[in-house]
Image (cartoon, rainbow, N blue to C red; front, side, top):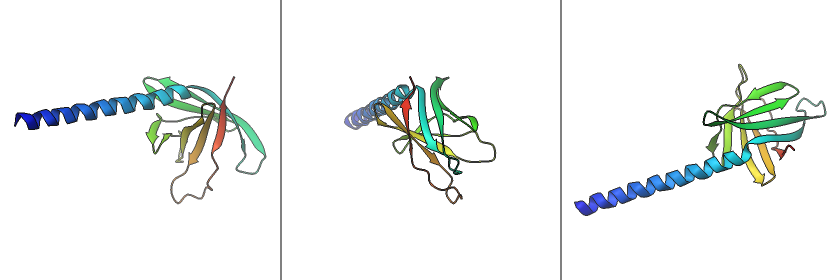
Length: 133
């Protein structure tokens, strides 16, 4: 009986250690994203291209992205890891959209716009962003 309890205790300890290491690694990626990133994208309405920025900051233990574009500023909910990307919902009234962020390489961050299934919005290619200087 003691052997079984010892094995279960060791397994629980191993799982907690693995989870702790995994969460620390995720937090490190978010910490590396903190700062201002700039991008240029084609206007989805056909009006040429425009420049914008995304500023990622830590607020109260959560990481939030603020997107600045000609349409104004939009904030995300806390960024959470989903399928290898950090995803946050945008605070757009009466409209559902999420933003997914991930590193392409050390100097490039990609942003994808995620619309609800069945929406009329076309899929946009990921936007590449460079750290603003």
